[in-house]
Image (tube, rainbow, N blue to C red):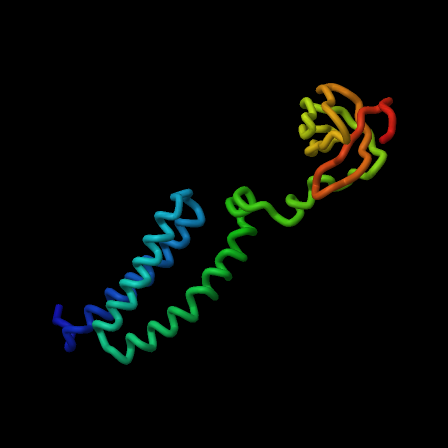
Length: 166
């Protein structure tokens, strides 16, 4: 095997290899909970890739830096948009449907049962849905029948059935 014509060609391959490593580390960050360690390694690898390209050639280094600065946020957003639709992403990120499901299908006047003591907040089952319940006043013991009086930010404000209206 013959040596490359330009000894700086090694920097080109190192630069491209480090960029490939950054992409692999980014993919692993989305699959493995690392507390951000893989994200830091991704950033270090990408920066080292740019430095290696500058060592190869100043002009190519400048062009490469501009491309990386433009492509990094675009690629990151594209990967995240695709990732949230994967089975792993769906388990790790709440969808809009899940976030809004707190009181979905529940309306004022529906009756349910307290699953925990409401002091004044606890868990209530209304139909087949478990929601955070907020007692209208005071505490409500577990196992009591309640009626929804208001829906506030995904919580059901409730009053014990049979108690006086406020």
